[in-house]
Length: 445
Image (tube, rainbow, N blue to C red; front, side, top):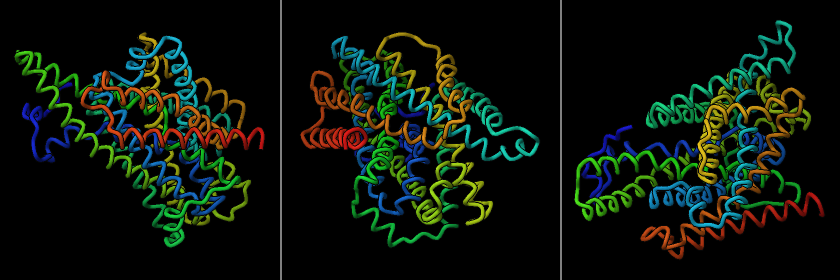
């Protein structure tokens, strides 16, 4: 787990070199997988098919929020050397820790369900027709796809155990594959760029679009990855600290180098976040634009399943569009399902201070998805519901993050300045307010 970075990284330098930056590129890309998971497919495609380009602005502002939130999570991990759940356990009361853990686990369950279903559906769209032609029914093929998904996720988890750089490389490759697939879709669909630009720049929201907008927000600002990003900082922190210990530096000199390293590491991670999150935003926008251009006006019954959207693309755009859609969904499901398991591990170990076998957690979290498949429930509706649930889980992660990063006793010189703190609380207030409006609409309006 060594890191190929000169000891000079510990010293403050006026310029950032590509060599140094490449050594620190990766954590934000791992986090960005959660922003282009199967839940995003569901909410973006339904949003584009039903309402055209009008909800593109939601993706833009969700991405701005996501960059701020991920930066704060990364900063907490760098400044404290702990994950967000570990910091919550250290600084909050026991009843509050238990409440936060329950909220985090509900979000983790919703996440695992959406991501595992998406990966299984991606397998089904690619190889399902072959098995259906040989006499298997849809439920049996989906269960077989679920088994294949489990095996591939186990392989990705094993890769992560062998070294974080290898794992980050595979995740970056999967994200690149999703982006490439949607570049093909956009090339084939010929969108109305004037209407798309209007949808990005001019907000439009009413009682009809609110549910999808909140689902899109929940699918973009993901609570579980807020916990995870603080953990993704730790391997490099540990590597630097171990090198410092082995070099037998004086305590004062080692402390100074560690402080300088943290400042420089945070600069690297900010660049990582800007590149990765904007890449995820472009992919999300491409999903919605494709749906708006190709699926607008298609009967509701047809797009009520991702499978129906996949089948519709064939006659409209050709078989290449269908293959690109299925491959993107599969890559999204496999990578995000793996990230979801890692996030769940960070949550349970951080809040409860227990060691829980990661492969056992994967087996346990497969159960809800298997039940959904076996009962023949509508995958798209389950995905949309899971994203709305995730939106309600955001405050359980975001509010503690804002409280901790605003405390000097926790962050020292890394404490949020007035502008950052204000922006963070505005984001939290907007999300909580939207959730309250959605609740009113669903149960009282």
